[in-house]
Image 1 (cartoon, rainbow, N blue to C red):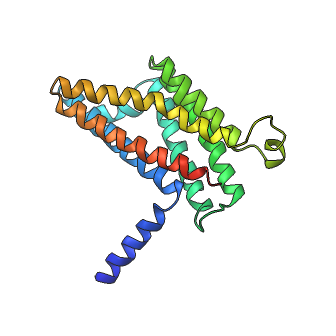
Image 2 (image 1 turned 30 degrees about the vertical axis):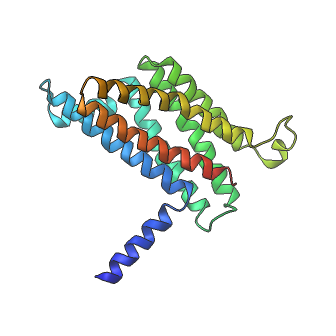
Length: 207
């Protein structure tokens, strides 16, 4: 039993040692918390759990686009995990595959946010994030011809997180001021997700 526990801890440590594991841990926490809080909120107005969950994932074209984005992000996180399985430097092909798929995920996310009336977040968390990821995926022979340092694209990805993170911080502050425990809890968990994603973004700079 002790050996199994040690093996489990070792496997978990390996999974979280690279950017892919951090991305997908954040993705999983964000997904589970989002569904849970949506179901609770919907239940308060008489919407059943399964119906609320279905509404969360495919209740509108915007929700469907965000669901597609989440699936793509999970897949790209796995590519990063494989790329960094042996540490730095990563497997260049798999790392680039993670960047490209993340870029498409960001485009789908931006579309979903725009359709749900969030144009600023669509432009930053969606379009700006996609530019950073697609730029990071450019072949080295192309990047060395650019008039600026290639690492700029990684920093663009980090910058794309900041408006959404600022919005979450304001939401938590507002929830605390109004004694809304559920809102503050959801916001705090989302801040944890952003912390994991940012840590993964920064880890990718080593590539």
